[in-house]
Image 1 (cartoon, one colour):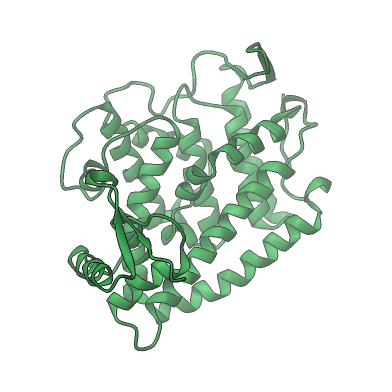
Image 2: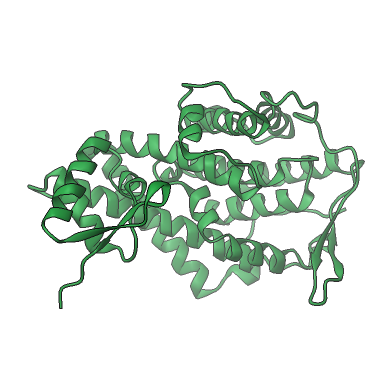
Length: 350
């Protein structure tokens, strides 16, 4: 059976690219601590938006959908789920809230992971929540021509309890080593996916556990900017990295570099977004209307009201609508499309 050891850094991760990403995240964390005292109102607004975005994105990656309005109502607790997809969305919200609120008290053990998985499925009526998988599976890929090829064999259902115990023991023992907690979080989440311990929910659980381990390493960006949303935006890269790192996983010859580099890049992108949003909110003398216009100045292409709300979460919808009307009247932007697809683009000045 596959073994795990997070006390030392695998040689393939000792590259300038990986080390530069780790260093960048260390620097961003220092600014994050400052923002916690200097921008409390903006951070509260960002948390509310990130909670909705994370819940929606992580579920959409797995093909679980609802409308934007329903997503907001369910995540905010203003409506009970209407169907199974919304029940799964409610479950993700609950586990996400548990991690945000109680991460320092949550141990990384097989029993705790089972409890989180139970809560993920609590609203669905399905009996699989909180139980290891009861059937074997292999990780396969479709090669050119349509043939299916086994990339590696995940542990059998019978082997899962021991594999998960080994995984969690390796995490506990990592404190005695010299590996950076950022690298450990990424490797743990990847190895969890490869074990594939559940009949369903493995991808969502891996993203929740990534958030938990980042919190435990004192990286809280996932509370303010959706890491799950970043993964959804770049999911082709996510799946490619998973595929490349999983080759040879069952016999311990896999290369962690693709998935770790990908995840570190996502974390850097989230910190950069946090910096940009808080800098925009803290611009001296800038009104909320000015901040709406600043979104158009820094982004290209069509921008929707939801895009602006995500960039400026403490600005009300009514204020955004007034700002858009004023910018349109002044000829700085123009409206494109209609209905749910309505957006605005900046007018180029020749």
